[in-house]
Amino acid sequence: MSVPARIDLHTHSTASDGTLGPAELVRAAADAGLHVVALTDHDTTAGWAAAVAALPPGLTLVRGAELSCRWSGTEPALPLHLLAYLFDPAEPELAAELARVRRVREERGERIVRLLQADGISVSWSEILAGAAGGTVGRPHIAQALIRAGLVATTTEAFGRDWLGERYRLPKDDIDVFRAVALVRAAGGVPVFAHPRASRRGRIVPDELITALTAAGLAGLEADHEDHSPAEREHVRRLAAELGLLVTGASDFHGTHKTVRLGAYTTAPEAYERIVALARGVTPVASG
Ligand code: AMP
Ligand code: FE
Ligand code: FE
Ligand code: ZN
Image 1 (spheres, rainbow, N blue to C red):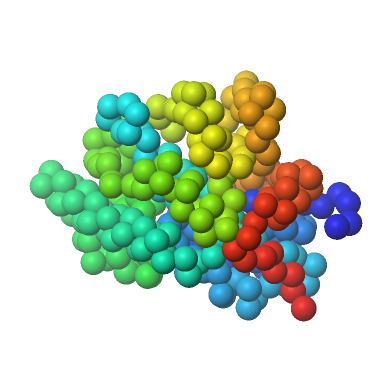
Image 2: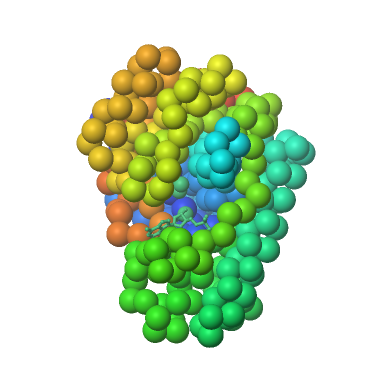
């Protein structure tokens, strides 16, 4: 690979809660000067084919997903996100779990809408589903309905405590994180813990869990992420060095649902090469 390569390993398209289609996303990634981009939609691989088909020259696509997980070692269980790279999307157990989580997301979204309606807030589930346009439904789609209804001005405000951040936040039945790591490995994929210290998102997991996940097959930690403070990034780096884990950085781009730009945070070529070397599911795709 020519140096210096610009590598962004965490992005979302309209296959989940991003606002660019997968084809638009890879074009935008090339325009942003990236050499490698990973498409990591929540609990789905639905965007992979369109991203591959639209891949511009000079850009390599890493096919991935961000799995909605939970750790039951504390009460109530902690939700967390696991990035999975280059796994075989046809592996039946993993594919079935992703399909189950997508269903659970729809049920939970509909329950949130009923809670809002019970408080006299006029939002429509069918309109929110239509807004997701077949992609994995998430709170950002409900946030858009709150904006359309004039109740909040921005997505950030919609994630405040009075709205989807607390009052109208409901848990969903996510994948047990140890099971998720095992399923990703069994599908030939490489699991990386997304934004593990993002305390501004809520409660964070103890380092002991990351140690246990490493023994179970976790390959890396995302350190450089906008939701990590400099001290949190440093903590993640130290922990990764102790445990022999690889370290990534990424934008977690969501189009206009967030303000972060593609390539705002990047991954070192050595870490990317470790991911590729570990993968047994699918390969990175470079355009013709
Ligand atoms: P869900 O997966 O339905 O629980 O919704 C979580 C998603 O909402 C995350 O993946 C982010 O895309 C988005 N999100 C979470 N917090 C915020 C925030 N404060 N501002 C904007 N988007 C957020
Ligand atoms: Fe998201
Ligand atoms: Fe995430
Ligand atoms: Zn993400």
